[in-house]
Length: 171
Image 1 (spheres, rainbow, N blue to C red):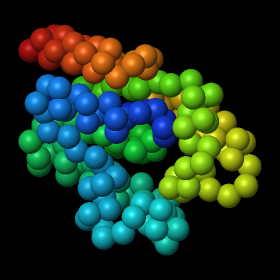
Image 2 (cartoon, rainbow, N blue to C red):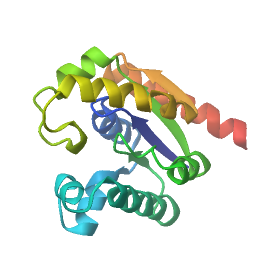
Image 3 (cartoon, rainbow, N blue to C red):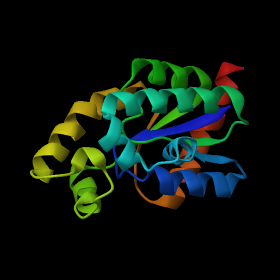
C-alpha cells in the first residue's frame, strides 16, 4: 500500500518523504519531479505556458498513473495536488494519506525568498500566501492521518506507526 504525503507548500513533504522512505526501505516518488520528466519542462514553465488548469490535469494523470502502475512506496505530492476531487479520491482509495501541518508563520519564513512557486510569484506575497493557506486548509482534512510537524525523527516514526495501524485495520 502507498503512503501519500499532502500538505501546504513548504510543509516539509519532500524532506519527510525522503527520510521516511530511507528509514523504512521504501521507494519514494516525487509527483512534481515525475511531471517534469514526463513533460520535459519545469513546473514553473508549465504553469506559465499552459496555466493552472492544464497543470492540474497533468498532475492528476501522473498521480493516477503512479498509484495504479508502479510499485507502492511514499508519494510526495505538490501542495495543490488535493485541489481536484478526483485526485483526492484516488489518493484516499489507493493509499494511506498523511497531511503534514505546519503553522503559517513557519511556512511564510520558509517560502519568503523562494522564487520557484508559481502561485506565490509577483507582488503581495503575504496576502497571496495567507489566502492560499486558508483556502486549502480544509481540503487537506480528507487525509487518514493529520500530523502536526515536530521534528523529522518524530514525524517519520509517527507516520509509519499510523500507517501500520491503518493496514492492520483494513485487513
